[in-house]
Length: 155
Image 1 (cartoon, rainbow, N blue to C red):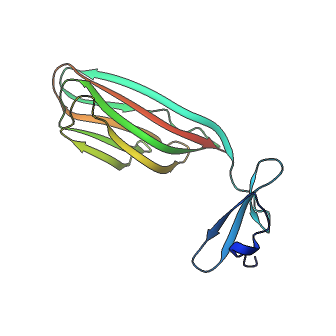
Image 2 (spheres, helix red, strand yellow):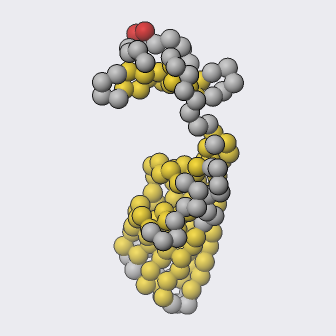
Image 3 (cartoon, rainbow, N blue to C red):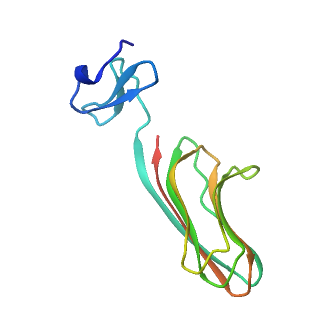
């Protein structure tokens, strides 16, 4: 693929990327697909918005909220995940992505106050079978955890 420089970008509808050696343009074609220009490599495209909210309560111990696993043939891009207490106490709130066997922590808040969320904001791509899990540990009696995940599916 030939080099493309900022002043020679072929399309006004493009984003410029740089891999450390070469510049490339990612453009939107007439059908709304993202493509590398020139060359026409089709990139995955937006399929649907994703939002899920869960809540759970416990008398003591821990609360774990498992979000819906990504279906076969899709990828989920998580942009924001958060968890907060609406009542009670906890020693921590942890946010993770998991495949059910291995968990990868993405954020943690120690000694969270009521109505003060633990928040992850960024981009994490989940493959089929993976899901977000948000847990409150060391919870006291009457503790309620609310959690939400926002992102989008690509296909």
